[in-house]
Image (cartoon, rainbow, N blue to C red):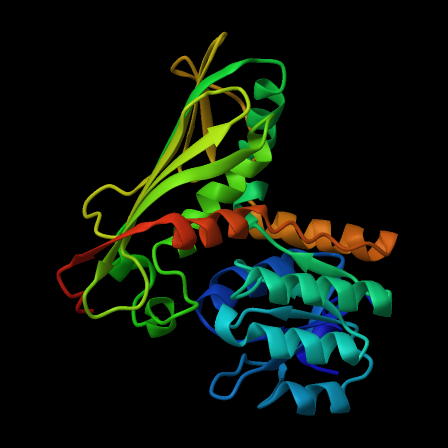
Length: 317
């Protein structure tokens, strides 16, 4: 038992983090540390460790050595996630997937089927849905008629994803890595579903994934929905969703952290996206359920299917 495990109540569920990169260190480890439901039992990484936590170089070594740890959080790039998730489920472990849940829709659906067969929990997480203003926004919109939605999600890739070459490789989804956060909020708060009707994707000539995207959605109510994603933003960063309704305008900013109605800020809880993920994972484990919503990833897949490709200048880190 590690030092980390000793600091938690014995009833807390042991969990291992697979992939000790930036997102694991910045978000998962602190949230597990604050959680009363989980204790960090181990990490799996070829080249990184956490002080006081038992580490393994491979998932196979962890699964063999620690049958007492019932859950894993996969924080590796989506291109390599399927085989790890499959192995963990086959070994009888519950699995939490970082976003996006996989490199393809088919592999996520395959994992969901295996989890059901094994009576295990599979949780495809969308951390932005746990931003404090998202639930209040969903409740406010539920009784109103939406007239239009505009998403502007622009940030500096060099600031937020330094040195992460996997994002630029096929399967890494490029600017959709942050953009899918906006899509996860959109699919959560909209009273009616939307589907993509047009897209324009801008690729650096030296990269496999886009650096910018313009999306147009349709829905049964006829309200226009547009999204602009860009990784070339300097200065202030933009993570905004504006929804015009028959009863006022809702504005979500800071990635869903704040909400305003007709310019007046609304009350919401504290920022705790990843804390919310682990609260939900614990709830799913108690109920013996899975949660695998692929709707944000489906919109990304549709964008690659429908998108007009535009080539721009090379991206140099």
